[in-house]
Amino acid sequence: MLRFTVRRLLLTIPVLLGVATLVFALLHLVPGDPAQVMLGEAAAQSDVDELRTKLGLDRPFAAQYLQFVAGVAQGDFGTSFRYGTPVSSEIAQRLPNTVELALAAMSVAMLIAIPLGILGALHRGRAIDQVAMTLSLLGISMPNFWLGPLLAILFAVGLGWLPVSGTGDWRHLVLPAVTLGAALAAILARMTRASLIEELRELYVLAAQARGLSYSRAVLRHALRNSLIPVVTILGLQFGAVLTGTIITETIFSWPGVGRLLIQAINFRDYPLVQGCILFIATTYVLVNLLVDLAYGWLDPRIRYE
Image: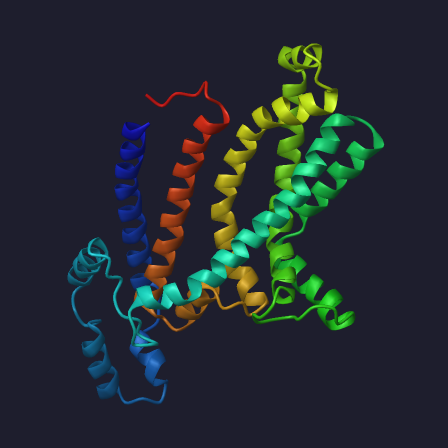
């Protein structure tokens, strides 16, 4: 297990380096001058040139790239053009809000998906199964950039039950979490149903009943646990989608997280901040996939990594 973990951690280095290189190259190829954006269209060219020199944008592309990679290797993502503060501190300030939203969205997804998947598997082909799968199909079909405004219009503007934007108490979290978790719940529900149906066909379920367990306990104690292995896989892979989904959701609901910070940085041509946000999302995605692999051994002891 230790050798597997170390090997996977070492493999993340070229992946993150590739992400950093691609992001750096694309940002510098996109039309637009950060110095011009910061000073405005009416600024004198001499002032723009002076600011470019101050920000280091007048240096050769290769020199800027090497400085960026060297800084990342030391944990230094540079200084934000817009805020004049370290990129790491800007991300750290907004990270708790993004983590809170992502965990709330995944909690909403699991609270909806697991019961729907179990009901669909236990009542396969019946009305309950058809209703559960219809709901999951609706969840997959509704993108968050459409569902978010719809929920805001209905529950915030129309009924006035929930706030439409910002942070505060739990009421501010409901609409963004449901918007972000709906599509994930739909995918998990269908995966839970399909996986549990396969496990219910195994002989160990019948053997558990022969030992005196009721059918429901045999399903929940044995079949459900084994069926969660592919569900955990999808959950881990979709966590990256949840993080990227926060970019749109946080923008819709003015949620002050890393996703909204990334959009603001792109609009302002804040190269260091954009690079830092994307690297943070990529690193989180890679580490979550590693945790998913390690979780296999806990869910199914038959899995060996050596």
